[in-house]
Image 1 (cartoon, rainbow, N blue to C red):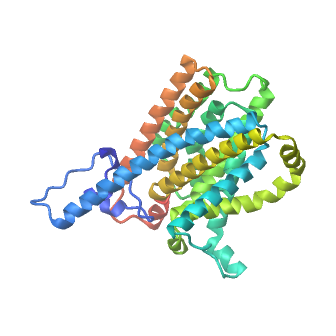
Image 2: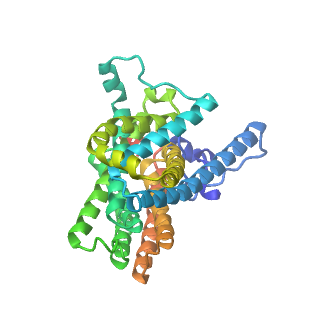
Image 3: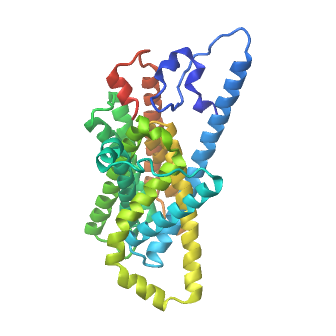
Length: 386
């Protein structure tokens, strides 16, 4: 619990609060001496404790439902031979419908943030919203294509390198920088991923060629780039004043609706014969089983994305992607056990190296944020978004 210490616990940390109001653990926070706690102090401490517990719970949900989403997605792609684009549209449609139903029942559904506005105003004020939603959809489409080509553990292994792509995007847009020690930690992270990929059986037996291995790696790399851009545009949108009118759940629902609307046109045009053949030839039992599996997949998908959006809103992009890296290492081990993919000692050593690189990177990033000046420059304030 102590690792998620609020920045309000120390006077030096007050000035390092991020623009979106998020807080992240600080290493070595000095203890503040005070004579006797006041009522406000007790209430604030209790509130901070509840926030830390909630964040830990959401992270745990993020980890476990992520495995459920991966397993059900892999079954739909391989056992049912659903095309990746069609499955992506199905996931986005079912998940957004389910989430919209929950929000409506709770009375918390809000309209689109740019309702009743001109096109020019929508693009000028909500460009980050549109771009984040599109890159979110392309991320999951690329991931589904990767799952259809390779083992789930292999896809998650390659996707564990997303901190490198997130860092590269942040550096390219000059909204962050990396110290030499952080670069070393990222190198260990990347080296562990390469070692794990080389040491484990990564492809299905039906796809053994090097060209297919390269194609699968390229597809997952594109997914990582989409993830990095989605993170950057979502954090930029959250840092703007127009984002105050929509919460995390509604933001996720609108992202999914946007992706489903854009991708449904090519999916329905390209796979209309497949849909008709499936509806005509499938038995009632198969249809019920498919609906049940799709419903489980949608529930896991909604829970995973809501937890992901919640964590991204509370944490910085690089810290979020580091936690995502650790989540994928957990998913690699879980999917290897579920699908019976063997893990060699070299692969296990690679995973351990990646975990060490993740912890080193997070520690160094927390140290740098803690030692930031009390009045950061505009460039520093912008870099804290990432």
